Length: 306
Length: 306
Image (cartoon, rainbow over all chains, first blue to last red; front, side, top):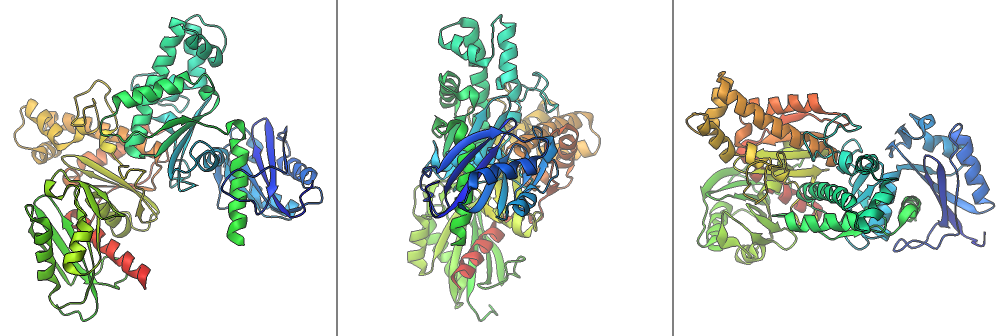
């Protein structure tokens, strides 16, 4: 620790690991701050408050820690710092995590949703930097989205806006995890791609499917084209309802080769009518987007206090 | 004119008529002000600046007019007061209407979109009053929508968010005015209902169809059920993407009998999965919503100056 002034700590608490990023408390918010420390720990699932407190204590050393912001996978009451429901870390359900950690650590602790954290970072410091209205989409096992306007997530009345994965694409399609039929997730989610690839005789997961498609395998190409077409339809709905100025696509399924995303972007362009189609670009912060979003949130709160 | 203090004037400029509402410039914004004057004129289509100036001059009399806000059917650059495109009043296309009227009248003139004006009024003074996140939907020949968060329209990057009428409901459905297939408008727009009713042997327009359905006519009921089902699907998409705290439905097709809307609300409740379904309620301001929105906008700008 070579930094003499006050610091803030961001923690991205995932189902299996916790990433951290320590930064000067008054760093500029124009670009990601040079981290004073950055790393990864196992998620303390059984006793999360004690475990997370121990992680913070090990990181703060004798630094002047002014604020901690955590992101959590699940529904969060951000105003109250309460985890409403977390599928991946059930021991957090209903817990006033912000207040409990704040009492243990003696500094303000804010709790935010992990998808919101990643979206704010991509919109402000990543692929959407400089654009006022950004929709950030993460393609993986599930599909998460968030509309970031002027740097802030537009959360909706219950904090659950942005569920692009549950737009109906095929009214008579497969049953979705949500109970309805033909949601985007039933076509483009990682399990759906894995199943389609296995049915076509392919081996391995979605990464193998994407590699085979890039290599020219006809069956793989057909699956990717169907997925890209479904994503394009969902994006056209998004343009009609939300009208973003930029669409940033990240998550495991948007990694290089970006074929699935570039093909979807081409379909959107070809099928648009009145829609104002914005740039559709890959995310740039990768797996560090979430923890960058917690640090950005911490910096905003510190700057607001000065 | 019995009011001695300063006044503001709101004008709702439609394709055939202009509605006006004159109110005290510092009226409370908690509820619609008691109008000092309220009425209707023919729309001056050929020479809109001269015609609208004449209307304003006839209304202001010797009052201390401080501000005029107009709403226009079409795409408006609200920051600049420029009408980008107006299908119903083509003579306004590309015109810096705010600046031209302001020069003619000697007072500040703001120009806003008519759907936004009506939505802000319904959200703040009508059926959505007291709720932070309101989506206002107008069902008529076309279908217009706007998300109003904390009293302000969330416009999107190009001012064209809220186009619920162009959500795809039937991928292989009828061709829409927008050029795509199976949009909500191709099922529930007034021309679509008129066509379906004529094909079923019915006489008259959508009003007759709704009345026949209410009276128990089986063919009419089937058409209304299909329309309500399509509207329900669009509302579920809206809940997934925008997560409003209230959905207000107005426009000609939502008039009493409200069967189409109440049936759609029932379908939404029955089909929702993870969705947070908000109250779905009829609009309360009727055809005066738009002009109330212009007055509310004028009052906000006046209060911001004090």
